[in-house]
Image 1 (cartoon, rainbow, N blue to C red):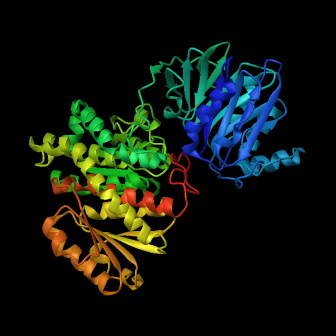
Image 2 (image 1 turned 90 degrees about the vertical axis):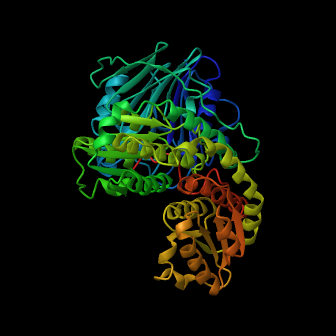
Image 3 (image 1 turned 180 degrees about the vertical axis):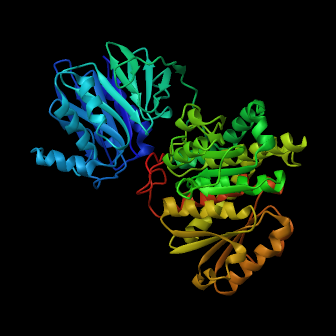
Length: 591
């Protein structure tokens, strides 16, 4: 999962690439690099292990350039493994994985080629250089014909100043245009504020920037007619909180929920009415945080719609030979809309005749393009790798979808439908818990592990709270169904072990309290989150956090907020950066 950018600009080209790379850094921050090509046909490269900020300094000369920020797949983070890679007259940046690179590298080694890195990407630039006979485009095409796997490329040739060739196969690539610059980029959000118009490439398409124009074409050089759209406005850090992106994005949750609800209210679901009314079986697929949202959707949709819903990790769905087919609905959830496993699951569903409905934050994403119908949440740009506001908005969109399904089947909405408009203000009320979460983080910052418990819908909130602590504070945590605690996991409880319980379902409150009491009896330090006054007053918990009152079916959208903030505070108190957790990238575009 890497970020690539290409830019042609007569003024400040290096600075424009550097700025766009900063917007792409959530895709990877093991290393970064830029190659610039001047009108004198000179290639200059600067690349460093670590963050994009390491590339600051005197700009490299040139009016054409490519840049890269890396999340390592082949080869450890190092200066040598950083992109761009150079061979002869060519420089290249690559996002994706070349699955047959070992065979190709062996072939090139036998031909006397020497490699300076451990990456699969260096193979590509050497193939281009070997194929070059004076035609830049033809050399790139011939090299790509040898590749197996997924890739988005941006390539420079010193014989052709002012030209960049890009190609997409399985990894996202978008072209962007501004009055003073033309761009290639891995995604739309990174171009916000730079390009005015954008157009995504489809698999198998090449993008040529030359002579002040952007041209899409196939492998034979035949031009493909494409339409550019205006870059949508993106909200970045408009919150009252200062600090990290994660803190700012948590603070933006009320605004994100409000904007998303307004967008949902204006969405016409008539085009997918037939499948909402008559789907035989509903499948939901997602990865990571989005999977917890999909599982919550499965819970609420089954109970309200009385239609079977099966939720799967997208990475497993395509390999289990699912029974999905005609008259089935697949709901695919992905913040970026570029998650490779989710895209593959959606493609499989379409191949088998199912209807694909996407929930994503990016209207121009690959998933949105693939789907039969797309619900676009309005969370705004989310830069921190750990998802926060996008999760709350995914839940809102999926709840709204479940309500629409019920309406099209029985002509009535769930009794919680009218309370969607109250979510934004209720989310602001949750912020009152933050001082308490900071204090708890200080108490537990040296913990070796912790449990998060819940029943019913609260199991999903518990799982997401645990994931956040694992992702950014590097503390082992497990989200668990409270009723299962005594079936093995209770053995891990010891004196001082932190146990968090989320209890927002009144019918199950006593059951959750039993699990909390069992943990406390064995020395655990216990924390309870609930909006239920009696549950809080009668609980044995050492610490209690009162949540705002809203329909309990909607509580997962709110109950996760203090857990998100707790994880962020734990991370900071342990001396880590919540925006850039080790080993992780936000947009997972490889399997």
